[in-house]
Length: 454
Image (tube, rainbow, N blue to C red; front, side, top):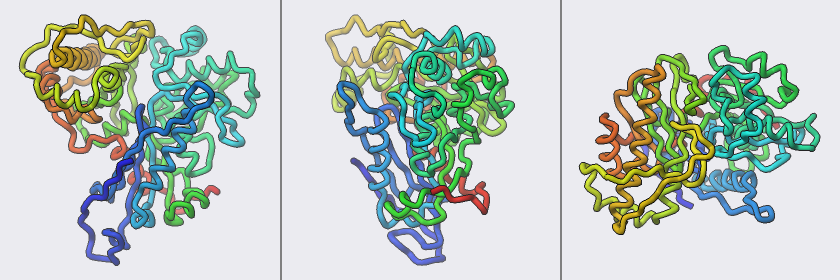
């Protein structure tokens, strides 16, 4: 557990309670990434009041990880970690989750009907059926898409499907707070086939027998309803605290970086590598794992590779990464050519579920080995941005970095050399901060008569 309270300026009005003025309101964002969960608490000026993180508790069901129980436990641990003195000021909450992490639940109880399909799982058995109803090269035409996971479950599961509903990781966690099943956002719903340009599911999808499982969709950062009374009482939140729709983790990281002009890009270096480029054009091409998310009147074009920090942690400890990185000369090119993956399968910029990791030959020097891996990941990043431009996206002009890898200065210099672009660490690097901005947006745009859901 790590929780941190930060110094903050405050208005002159109201009474100071635990460092916060009684007239102030705070906005809670939570990020559920691939390796753990975080929270950030901000005010309307974007100043951070508290933040914390939790690793996912090890919950097992037989020999397999019970991910839904682990996520739920992490959610409530984060809520407990929020300083008690700040909880009465929390006006709204939003959560981001990993893209295409899919949970099939009972629409009456919210209980999962099967284990969740994780973000990087592929269901190639469903591809022929999905391709028969989807536009050519649409983002759902990938084995790891949410729609492929839904179709695969529909064709293979023998449970009662009449009461089943599909939720994404963020949707389900938010439901635990607001109690209204079946609500999603158009960022998470993109990979189940929702069309954010026309703001609806296409007719070809709605005509399918499993269409009743699809959640209703709202814009990210839309007020859903008040927090449930039992959660409110348990944690001491105010009566008018609202819960808002969320987004995916990489989009939340983009929002945190506040890159607002076309040509600005954000690379999230977490367990995986996700790139997002703000573009005036929408690009979709499942052959390369490329898709576009709507961001108001522009488009976030990009994709997510399975390379990233998870590979590094399989080989080096955090201490080793820090010490070895210091010995790297980032201005020198590494002759080693790898394709670092934590397991078989890649999504972007190559969509190949059978791609094998390439991490050999390993030199005797660990410094040279780490240099080769970091530079190889940078080459994948460069290939990703080059591909986006080839497909018609706005030209990349500057890259901001978010996620844990943003802290590695030697890696930043390697990437700047390989990309041939200015690369800087985003002032805000945590996806949880972007989720907090969505909570702020949702509170400001809420209906004054938002109903309470018990």
